[in-house]
Image (spheres, rainbow, N blue to C red):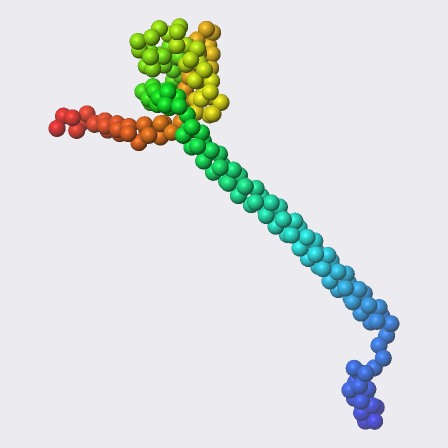
Length: 186
């Protein structure tokens, strides 16, 4: 019975019992592993923070570049309006006639001869060709028209920068819808 009580007391004080070296080594290994995992998480966390801050910096640069581009486009558009206002009446007439000819046949280049016939119906083409070519060259520099040469002939087309193009688009009546054969028979 005394041995039984002694074993009981011995079992009762087991938490305070001195541990063997195996458990101490295991405890140190586990602590080392957890500290290594903690260091890895901290390294990953700091790496993500630097990457996020780099992405945010790049995003800010892109945003400021986009805003700068939008502002520059607005300035260019305002400058084109100012440039248009500074054109002579004859140059404005030239743009209006070119826009109307392009509206009649969209995406087709207009010959300078046809343009001269519209602008100067009572004059010979050879006498007005240098002036028309000069006007066209100036308007091409301003971005209101384009020209190209095919052999001996020069052709012109208007661009979207020409304010008369938008006016003609607004004035252009809608094409009537085609009716089906069945609805025509009724």
